[in-house]
Length: 365
Ligand SMILES: C[S@@+](CC[C@H](N)C(=O)[O-])C[C@H]1O[C@@H](n2cnc3c(N)ncnc32)[C@H](O)[C@@H]1O
Image (cartoon, rainbow, N blue to C red; front, top):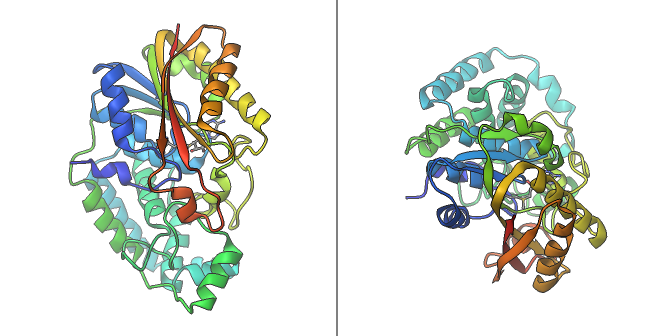
């Protein structure tokens, strides 16, 4: 059975765990160390731990960091439950929240029932999600339920929304007003306890991954923190002109302490490239970084996609920019696949979508 922690929180352009599992089985053995420099929701590091590998992940986005760290450094269920109960008890006595609600943009009034929003604002104020892994896990569970398809499930706190990206505030308010759709009353603490039971049905792996909230270009400077040589990378950099992770995650970023509205390119200049030259420059930087952190004879698997580039252009472009690496890079194989669920089209109104993905296997000599 698929480990339920994998789907702790959905993430735009995530790859399936079967993809990570396939390449880890093919290219690594138990005890090896693997890296994903654009780890998103942590699919690769988590799957690596399940398979007895050591794992390192990195991402600029605090949402990605929170989810990846929670699932790859999972605290005991008992500790998380005790903390949820304690938070619920102290919520009754909290008084500041009411004032804070009135300062939030109108979007929040339509997105959440007042009681649910009070609980969320209280938890946002109280959780020390970076300081402790218990609070980190609770924050990750909240991110997973913060918005979603309320029509189908009572596991989401919000009015009807997609579960991978947060829609733009004006669009959402118009949508809810036109349909007279009211936010349901949800008990955050009850949902958290239910989610905790569900995610912990199977024990999380005993191993711990190292997750960094930083730009992948900084990894060479962090090399002293890696315990053993890295010989395998399985990753998926931002696709060309498809999404902006900071903007599309604005509501989850708000919960983690960010502003209550979308902000462009808040964490990474690489989130959405519409200029192809800049895009190849970012991928050249990735090759430079990889040639500095990887051991001899390393395997690198890259899944990539684009709206305005043909698959052949992606493969040849990726290979061409690898020339900046101070070491030789050989293309072992590449494979083009049709995106079956078309996530980009399903969740972004008016999106042209991303139709193909390419998987490239390189060897760094
Ligand atoms: C295609 S997603 C990766 C999804 C991941 N494979 C998963 O399964 O969830 C690309 C990720 O790259 C991150 N990113 C963008 N620029 C970055 C940079 N310069 N360094 C590290 N991460 C970056 C984005 O925040 C995003 O999470």
